[in-house]
Length: 468
Ligand SMILES: [Ca+2]
Ligand SMILES: [Ca+2]
Ligand SMILES: [Ca+2]
Ligand SMILES: [Ca+2]
Image (cartoon, rainbow, N blue to C red; front, side, top):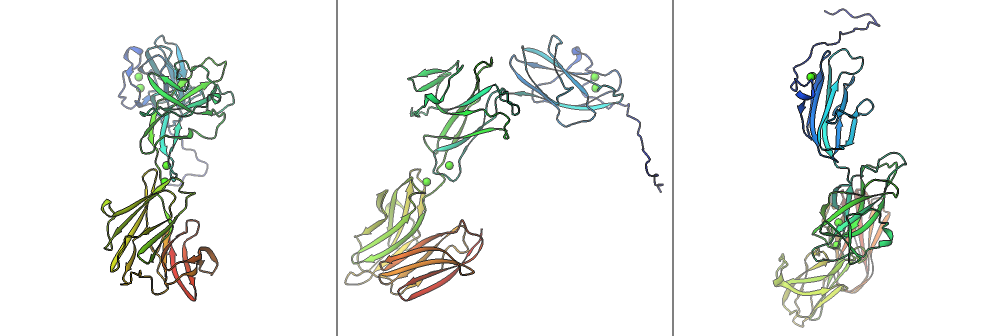
């Protein structure tokens, strides 16, 4: 049984004067300092009386050192950082995140004492890190959903490009791309690059730069941004080739008048890819006398990297396209092909492959016809027909196929469940044949849609389901 405390009662616990076992003791003097290294983190305690906790580490001249609180603690212990001559280089009276350049190579000390006015044991923690002040590249990643030849380069700001304040000593970043093994060069717009203190950089042939025996193309100049709302910089840079490594490097260039160096970040590589494979908007098969014609349509504005088409033919359904059944290769602008080497009494199955510059392929489904007439007349569809779309349900596009037995004016329209017309997929005269049309619903919301074909006196409607 506990009696309830009256309202307003303050329960005051006496401060702990006991000290937990300390793995780093004895470390009360520089002679007994506990040695740590970059990457180490310390969780410990300052005793209420006669305790100093001293840690030592070795820094090289120019090291950009960070000593920072790992988790916030209140009250906090006081931390001083001394160099080997016992000069204070930093303290945490105002900063929880201490960053400084080591002025000389040697031993440095991190000295932890009780906070002012604190008469009880105080837990503390800190981490020791070696930072790079340079604009190191963080990542080089493919730009998704594009036709290739570009990479997104992200880099961290230089030490001399603080995220807040308007007195930014950094003028701009220069982005460099390593000259590829084939020696292909970018066109360099030198007027956009105001060189200042690129002291290690040498011109080669007035167009390429040499740094430490590696050649670099200048790609872009990106201004430093004062008081920026973002943390890391990024830029979409061009590549010369897809599917192979491209290496970038960033330099941070100071404004004239600042006595600070140009900083060079660590290079990094990435691989650009053509993420968009060719896609057929529609395709069809039109049997004729002693010939079969295939027709197709590809959006050449989106697929501006289209290289050409390959036509495959086989006498059996379900065949696997291969070099042995490749009957022709067409470069670029074609949108039809007539096969004259067909014989009566044979069934023919075709597949069309569209290929882009990156080697990506898009495929039609299998297109079939038979040449049955002994008069060498091809077998046309004998009836009007509208097939069920496939796939169904679909996301985001599906193919709708129809057949017409004679030349007809054809319309193919899509409606939503309320009967509103969504789009017209076909609105033209077509020869007798079998056709497939792509319906792209990436802009539409989930649900049931209807498609209706009209040709001569034939009308047919079917239902399809969009599920994203
Ligand atoms: Ca201690
Ligand atoms: Ca101690
Ligand atoms: Ca890409
Ligand atoms: Ca492509």
